[in-house]
Length: 251
Length: 160
Image 1 (cartoon, rainbow over the protein chains, first blue to last red):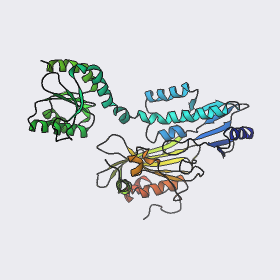
Image 2 (image 1 turned 90 degrees about the horizontal axis):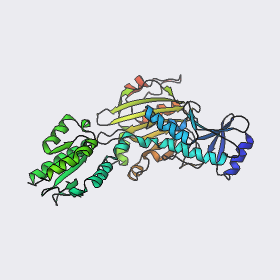
Image 3 (image 1 turned 90 degrees about the vertical axis):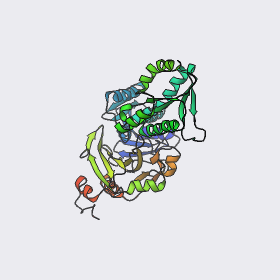
């Protein structure tokens, strides 16, 4: 194994520090870091003649578990796909790769990438995916509802900049104001905005698209229902029925 | 929510009750794990604690406190006590126990909140780190005794 370690040291031009953490198991201190500043954990050990095993000794999945658990079959499938597409495999949480003296340099760089990719699964967290809600809503509107003249971020009362509408449509003479709602804070802002527009005697109709209608409390749902004209309980509902409702507004 | 250094300090140090615990450390995927849910004593703030220790290398551990804001989705990692698992970006030539701590700067600049790292000599083992952690994040004395009974024979580390 000493030959391997010296070879790695040479290949990395002495930029890698190598420490024997346990008998026969060496940790490579490569200047490759996670987002939180910790170094990516890479270990090498001999696995028989010509076979060098690269492993993280379970550190990648353990790190991931601070914020994100592989606790469904779908998540497990994604993990296994990342690994198999990168010729790596997992054994009791350890992510491993078999290398050789000839390919050890590129394999170590490759595995650093694999560990980073697995660590990036935390971006699949529900709240991150859900943050795409507004983006998906806008994309749908720009692509499918152009005929109703959508305008983004409109302020119906010029001196009340805080009462901003996500989208304004003009299917007929009066405006239709549309809001996307993905949390209770936005739901309350929309309720206040609609009530203020009414108080200012504006002529308008208000539509709301919920990311998850059931996530709002009963009180918030009641307040919003009393303030706005039409609610789509999900993005899918909006995608399916938006055209039909805007067509009705034309007449 | 605007995360100032004062607010972060308040969130870390406010007295907390444990409202749910996954029990003792359990093995999973090559590491030991335990999770806890906490609530500030005034019930204004919700928190989550994760405890992890690698089985192959027991110096590789992390004990973290996350804030769970009610008005926003997702959690913010406020502080994380790590073992000497290897060098890091701020101390590339050392391997020492270190604490990741969120700051106003890391959050406002959209970096990973806990990417600020400070070396520490407050602890050197997992058990020490756990004791220091539960003291620093101010878990109520009653809950410390109930959920983290002393495990060594050198006296009660939780005594005040």
